[in-house]
Image (cartoon, rainbow over all chains, first blue to last red; front, side, top):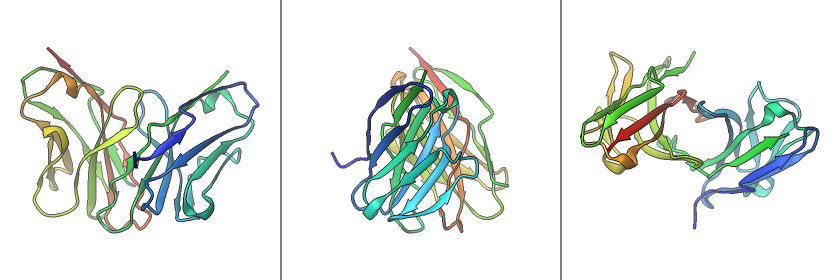
Length: 115
Length: 115
């Protein structure tokens, strides 16, 4: 399967704990995006990478959130000191470059539940 | 500011009837427009896009969408609905000159196709 892969698919944690999600994009894609989605809402942009460089981060994103993409391949999204409001689906997407590649390829998502 | 509006939270259609899911947008420049579909507990899947050229674009699963610049709309259509089309549909837009390729998302429309 050459699609976008996300792990774990589900994570239940207690408030205050740290969690980390991993995303493996389509191998030839150099752009990688993280989104958050809550029930009944569209995806909310969190951050994106071009290769290993983090080019943009949402102003709404708490300092508790950090993302990395070492070597421009897989990416991790870490949430420190989780809060109940962090409960959501975290979506990763990748795309190639060029004017016609606003088309994003999404993974299945990682669902976080903070108790 | 860029924005996308999906005025209907839910659309109900009988199987075999034509369906329309509405989307209007606001960008300062030329738009790139997208439709994505999300099945329960799954990631988003690309359906179709408008970049330039013919205002009527065809996509996956028999869906099509018509770009109307004067009405700033990009409604999703299908001539004959299937029960399997029942899902959550998202419209998204970005400015053609946006080098970050960020998408602005609508809140989604739940499409229910009844047998």
